[in-house]
Image (cartoon, rainbow, N blue to C red):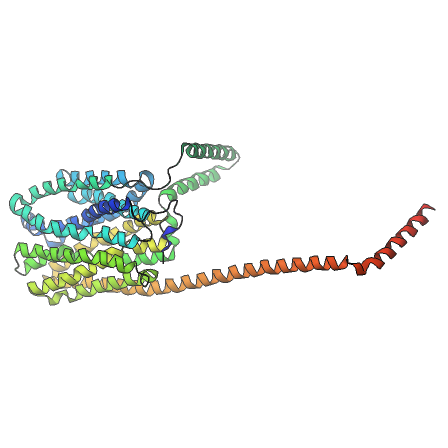
Length: 493
């Protein structure tokens, strides 16, 4: 069952061809966007000791980067609508490298990652339709692959170059996002010069009419016209009418709650292992285990989500994945040794991969491909608040109680609540959609019945006319003509 993503598309997605290099480029770009803020947590313990900071203060580094990545979503969406995915991703790669090399990790590199994430997700929806869940799953698998690579690499770089030298090397590695962006070939019908000239003429005519009409209009009305024109131009790049979309609002509220506990467990997994007395490389290897399982879970989830049994009700599958992820965090305090943390990392990687594989697929399933670009921007700007606060709140709990278990319990609780909320509200949404569909079918049937009745009545009227003009009415017609002639003769006399 194809999702509503094919609505308002101006081209037919090839579901292959150059889409394969596009998926590879998205694999790299999305991989760095998601994995890099988690991979630098390897340096947190040493940076904390170097500056003498608390857990909540050091968590702000990764938290600000993640929040900037999500908060820059609307700007990224506007730039994609204006210039396309390729130049935006290339520019984002340059910002990532500059931020790590010279200026600031959290803000500059975070904004560069934002310019990598949204365009990569958006262009997959333009190249794929029937196989889109699988393509999204493969592209999102870049995050665990990069995390699996970055975790031991960062530990190796720290041992040989320190955390400052490691940041310089990582900045150079992030420049590979520019190469990934070069693979994003634009797709869709190119506007001809004649069409552009026609559009320009239409705009000029509209402006002239507006100027003429504004002469006789009060200043307040003219101001209203200008405001309306500005709103229309803004909605052209970012569709604010999505806030009236029932499914979009359900998705937004559930995800805002979920992100309060989504990233904090990854940020504190390696520090938690070191807190238990586990050596640095073994602690970093926990992230690799999580990433390996995540790597397998994402494409597998995409295949399952694309099946005919799951895709029509994919929102339920997404709700289950969030609830499963939260349950893993609730059970994490039971892991008090390395073996327990390995088991936790396996299940955490499975749940994390399931959520990430469907994070954008479910959004596109709700709003369609035509409004997906705006939807991603609006979702990320709202989510950035909870993403920004999630890890620092977890760090505050650790500083207050001197124990990591309260942080894991908080994350697990909010994620389970988010999953339950989404399940209930999606059930309501599916019921309402079914009722609306049935109502539309009844209205269409009534309209068809009305047309049939009108046709039958028209036939009956024609039959009556034929009967009235039939042979049995001829004697009456002759008598009427005779009376008319007599009347005419009398009038002449």
